[in-house]
Length: 243
Image (tube, rainbow, N blue to C red; front, side, top):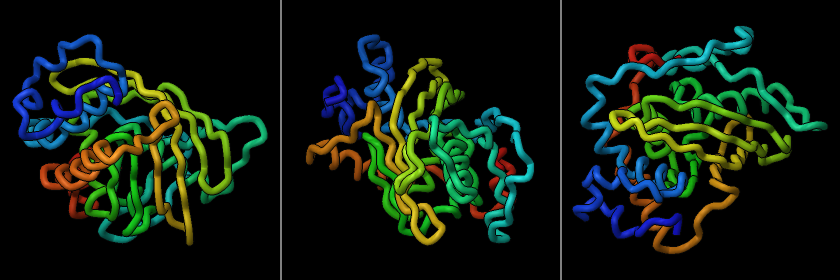
C-alpha cells in the first residue's frame, strides 16, 4: 500500500529509526509524507526546543476576525482569498470554516481556529484517525515540528454542500533534512450546529480501508499527542508564533 513496506514503519522496528530511509528516491510523495508524519513524535521531541515559528502569510482581510474564548484568543484567519469553482458560492460560516482549515493545512494552527471544531470532532487522512480534541489538536501542531516549510500551491472549493469539498495541492519540506514532496488531495469539511465535526484529507482522492492500515492510523492518533505539545492558552500560542 502507498509503495512502502508497512513493517518498516513500526516504532519498534530498527528500520523505522534509520534516517537513511530518506535516501530512497523511489518513495512516492504519499509514502514520503506517510513516513514523515509517522516520525512526528521523534522530530517534535528533538526539535521543539530550538524550532522557531514557520513563516506566516499576511491576512488579506483583517475584517475576518471574531472573538473566541479568553483562553484560546482572537480568531484570525489568514487564508481569506478563497478560490471557488464556477457556480460555487460560500456563506460567511462556510468561508470561515474553509479559511481556518486552509490555515491548518499550511502549518498555521491556533487554539482559536481549533475552537471552531467540536470537542468530539474527527480528523482523518491516510496516516491517522484522530478522534476528539486530545487527538486532533496535536496532529496540527505537529506539522510545525516536522516541516520547515509548507507551501500551499493550489486550492479550489468544488462544492459548498455538507461536506464542503476542496481540491488542494501543497509542498512539504522536512525540517533538518530538506527533502521535499508535493501532495495533491481532496479535503472534505463536515459541519453541524455551527461547528466542524469532521475533516477528511484524501490523498489522490482516497483513504485506506484495510485493517492493517487503520491499525497504524489509530496508533499514530494515540502516539502523536504524547510527544507534541499543544499550547494551554493564547499567550503560549502567541509565543509559538501562532495566531
